[in-house]
Image (cartoon, rainbow, N blue to C red; front, side, top):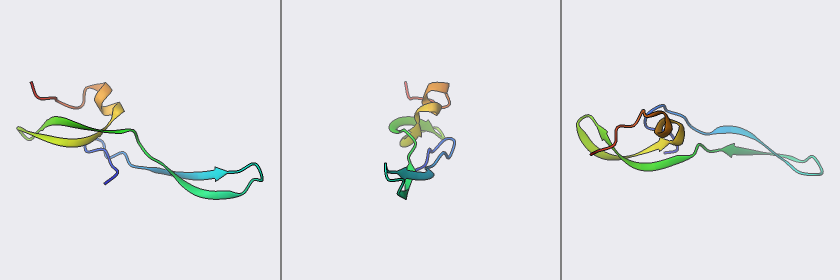
Length: 62
C-alpha cells in the first residue's frame, strides 16, 4: 500500500520526457517512512509521509 496512514497521500502521475520528447507515463511516490506510532491507544507500525511527521500529526510512543 503506497498511502500515508494519517492523511491518505498517495502517488501522483506524470510523464517521463526524453530529449527526443518521447513521453511515457510515470508515478511520483510520496516520501513514506515506517514509524512506530500510537494508534487507538496501541503502538503500531504505520507508513507516514514526512509532512505528517514534521507537522506533529503523528504521536510517537514514549
